[in-house]
Length: 223
Image (cartoon, rainbow, N blue to C red; front, side):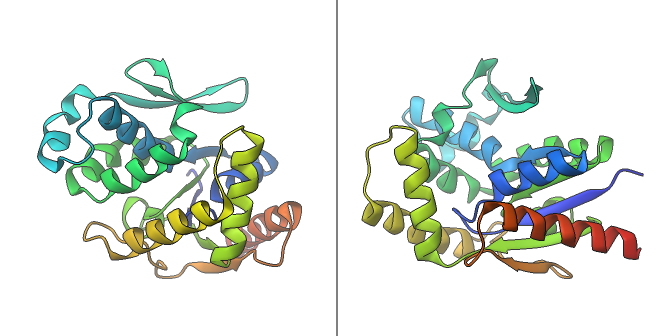
């Protein structure tokens, strides 16, 4: 049976980079579910309907989102187009937060996520993996760090990509998304039952990967 690992946590906790590195080390498939919501958010921004919940729900049948592994890296496709870079812009991050609060959007993407886990040893990260998407995951981890540290990491990442922003703006966006994620009616961000808390506030990247891999190996070996 495939092994499933659910990694949840707030924005900017490093879930994607840490989970991706852990998956590569352990020989698992990595699935960034946040990328799916970002792709839906991008579509809605392009259609100028991001502020209209009814129109977002109506357009779901027109949206095709898929994840593919290309040369060892996950690529995100929206209606056949590679949008892997575009979905990382700050405006699309906020759009992803908006669409992820809509139950119809979450239901539309649920099947894609579960199918990946059914077919592979997978590390899947997001906001509701251990609580909703994979409630029976073999390993559940809640990855987090202090808000100021998460903002500094995200700010550095965006600057390296050439995105013009400020630390203060990134911190403000992060706090707003934290509030939205924890207070939404549909699958709010919370610690899943049985999840191991992993706080990387005082850890560098390699130490964070070591921590996650250690939790996975210890849990799987104990079963």
